[in-house]
Image (cartoon, rainbow, N blue to C red; front, side):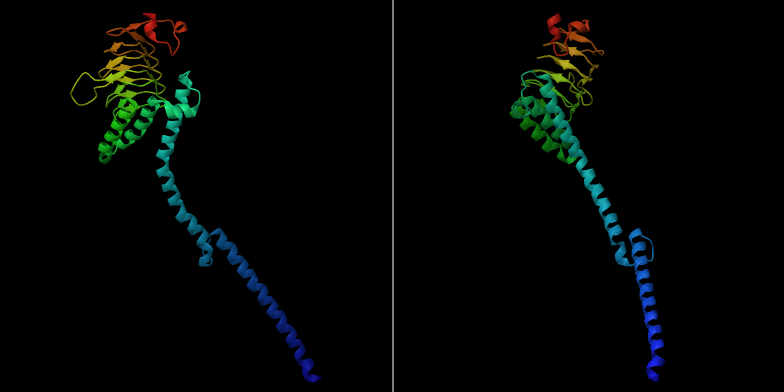
Length: 259
């Protein structure tokens, strides 16, 4: 009995010491896990993996977003062109009909692509070839270098010619047979600049490096060789400015009706 009684207190003390050591170890492990999750120094290397993964993925996600941004912008412009055709043509019934059966819209869509190609020197030749294919398919010739604004609507479209240095604003409407051409064979700016919400009637010719202001309406078969101030109505050969009360002129009426 004597040995047992002398060793019992020692055994109890050893058990208590072991429990304290186990609690201390658990406390240290918990603290290490917490600091590793917060990204502080001194944590085990494995605890830094989530942050390292996020850091590695961030540049990749940013690069992907930058690459997709131009295509998202192009998609937005194509949808706006489709909606503009529906709004300005009373004969348009559905988006599907407009998307499949409007050659003017197809020509604009083709130009959205070829213009982006034209801005890269090594794609200029393919851009020209694609634009000529679009001309063959739609009857509309748009040089890839021309700058076309958003929501451009080409009604009917056959016989339209838009030169290389032409600049067209937003919400412009062109009817069949329109020529936005030049009068000089020298390089440089030689084609017209159209403002926003301009309407150019069927068969009209706008020639030279002119500036046509916002909300100008050009009558059918007019030949414009001088600048047109904002809000003007231009008809005749050569085209002259006419003052028509806004209440008498609808935005889609042909100004030639008021000669």
